Length: 457
Ligand code: TRP
Image (cartoon, rainbow, N blue to C red):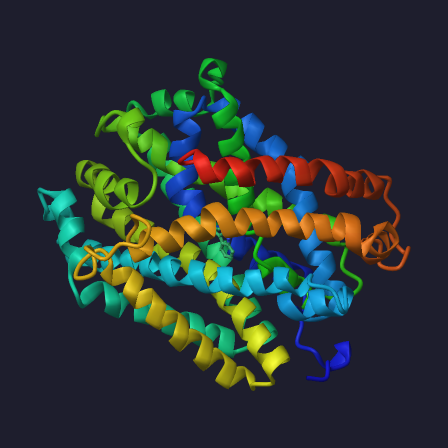
């Protein structure tokens, strides 16, 4: 299909809009249910330092690579590779991105749906009156209807926002919800850190314990940094294609990375001190993910004065964090269907949402009626999660930096990030050096290790 001249292409209207949308993608369940616990269990401040180092030295350069590919090509993730490297197999990296988007969204939407159930259970008071929270979660997640309905609600909201387009859909939605998210988290942080006994948690979180840091911890910090910034599947290529030509891409990438990290730290201050204050269990025995938010944190809300209010706020903010991520994933597929196969935005959104929902429902049912169905020893949900987060995203990120460092070439990359030499920065060459030599080695190690060591990404 012919490419529209960039003047006619929908785009973000403001710098803040770009940051809200990209940070919306980055800030997700990973920041809230994984980062706080992984940090606390792996050396606290020591892990945090490693993490921040990886965000700055690897994460920002990779994010910048994605932005520059998308903005230069003015196309979706697949079309971008085709345009920038015609008659080569590089477009396969774009295909991988589209498939990864499909896989991620099918299980991410299931989990996002669970947050809605818990929001409702908090509102009705059911959650705080349940004695057996583990059973409550397994009863719900194995129910053949309820989680499916919630997942479809999530997919519908996601589809409606994406259908609205970039300015009027994604940008508008994230510009309102990202500040709301930050305010709500800050509100819960204040409650959490002022609880009696909370300081023990704060200390545990920040005081570095280098004795537990080993090779695996280092890999985990890098894996978490990459996952948290949403790099590796063309989300940021797609968003990059909507960024205006005068935008300072390095600045934008740094601001997005800062926001994501800041919110991850806030989320830790929201979760960890409260867990310590009410001594709801040994932190080292807890596992990140659903167990933390659906089984452990409700114990905290039960013990906390005014816990209902905080439970409602918490599950609402979790849902907002998930939704601003799901829209960015759906947009990857929609932009592809629209620009490569010629569908209108409406049809593309419908086709993408419906087909992802079909796979998504199968993933959801793998906690219930399909729990006995295994592929290579994993349920459908487990397989989608493992394949996308552990394999496809890391290989995607690796191929993207190799593409920019070795195929797109220095002049083109520098031209793009300096807006045609209008911007000057001595950092540009350093960033390119990282993209060409350092990032591929670091991500390559993760990509291989993630196949063998559990829990890295
Ligand atoms: N960054 C998201 C989180 O922290 C998860 C994620 C990874 C993601 N890759 C993505 C979200 C791509 C949207 C698009 O939870």
